[in-house]
Image 1 (cartoon, one colour):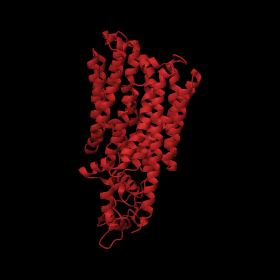
Image 2 (cartoon, one colour):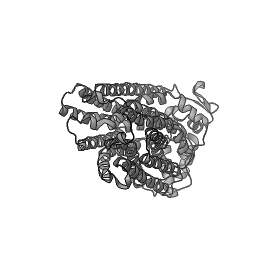
Image 3 (cartoon, rainbow, N blue to C red):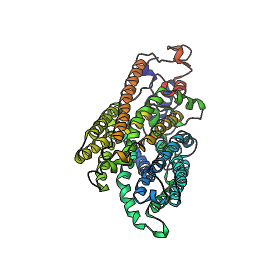
Image 4 (cartoon, one colour):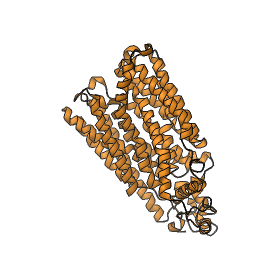
Amino acid sequence: MSTTEKRTPSPSTDPESSTHHEKAEGPPIYNADLDVSHIDEAKLVRKIDLALIPWLSFLYLLSFLDRTSIGNAKLYNLERDLNMSDQQYLLSLTIFFFSYAIFEVPSNVFLKRLRPSIWLSILMFFWGVAMTLQGIVTDFPQLMGMRWLLGVFEAGLFPGVNYYLSCWYKRSEFGIRAAVFFSAATVSGAFGGLLAAAISKMDGVGGKPAWAWIFILEGLATILAGVASFWIIQDFPDTAKFLTEEERTVVIRRLQSDDQFSAAGENFKMKYIIKSFLDWKTWLCMLVYMGSDMPLYAFSLFLPSIISQATPANLLTVPVYVAACIATCGVGFYADKWGRRGYFNIGCLSVGLVGYIILLASRTPALSYFAVYVAACGIYPTISNTISWVSNNVEGSYKRSVSLGMVIGFGNLNGAVSSNVYRAKDRPWYHLGHGLVLMYIAIGLVTSITYLLLLKRENARRDRGERDEIIGESGVGNEKNGRFESVAQAKREKGDEWSGYRYTL
């Protein structure tokens, strides 16, 4: 059977012709007896955007504020009041990344097994509690405990939401949504310092220092958002209450036409999770993502220190984050439009590489300030683009949830490195920090090129028929690729390994 014959057909608005065709070529069309010809697809996508993206982006803004607010708390005598050394402060940054990385994969599995409105709301509520309790700690061990718990409960949001969004949008639509969602991190960077400065005016209120009020007020805001999320966050497309039955049907059919065969639902099987662990793409993408995630955390944690020789004013960080936000959304939009995520990764990482080469060579504040713009416009877009690239190339809802959890978790584990490489004794030029970030970007660049070339090679093999399965009793194919009763069974069992599936380059 040829590759063309195996491709999943676009859903038809004629139930009878669709059902007949799908019986021959793929899985049964979702709700085949339902007429959806009156549904305007463009309006439906806009409706989904408004229901999902703004609130989820706000939640990620809170998440990034909460994890990085310790840097602002340090400015208001956190170390002095808790009798902490500089090394202990760095450890309190580092411990967050370990729990954050460890719990990302299991959290994604729970998200799939439970309703997103329940699971994400629970996570937010408890990380808000952990954040608030940071404001009443009295010593270093207590702070370490709260930072560990903060990582445990925050772990599920970023990989969970990216996986969740991938269950709503076609592969060619996912990038800009992931970019807008991730851009909340850039808004957080621009907004966090200003918010902390405002909260610091409460120094002494209730006998609490300014740094305690930063934790308490931001934590309480997260708790309230977690409670509200139970009613605001929508569930997966097949059960979403804000859509009509006809609209839910169109969403599922759109995904099925995009080779997302599991869109109509997938029963949990341990083999789907094992497949993710055995997939070479998962492990290579862990290195790709690591190459931008460690630089991201290094940049966001230490940007004020990097540019401090230019001016003590934190306001200079704001336009840097604005530039990063524009670059992130621009890359997301054009990567969706042109469908060449790998090339965008290579281009963005190259820009980031140039930025850090300039930082290493710079001996003037003005040149260093220019370089952070270049670096930001390379690092930030790569994060969301890599997530989109990974998601686009994994089929099977459980497999995709685990793959995204592993990739993002490993990247965040390297955030523990970023919190220790910008040492006070290295200022003002921070050779060690810049050099290590440069090394990570180079790893991301090399592995992105490798991943792109391997995907090209695999697509070519499928075009030549080397991956063809045997379909039916008298089908033509290779026995080693499997024997299946129908194309629908092959799609279900093999996911993105099915011979008709084409990887996004």
